[in-house]
Image: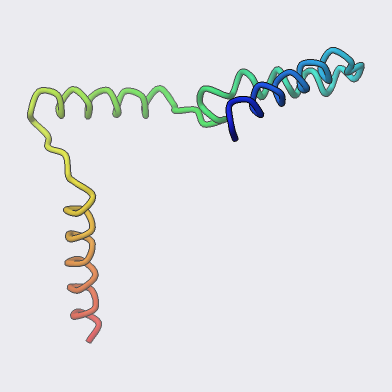
Length: 87
């Protein structure tokens, strides 16, 4: 969406919201606004801790990252081994 069109759409939404009388619609809009940052996805405290620990290991050099190409290559190797085991 182009910037000018985006601005027009936002102004149109603002105008529409000012005329809404249904509290359920407003509540849903507020809910959507609050979920925007995480798109409705919430991590548990345990998942957050695991992510923080993994990030710390990566940043300290204890864990390495993989390029997309490396991940694809490893997946193909695993697939090949699984196919060989089936044969």
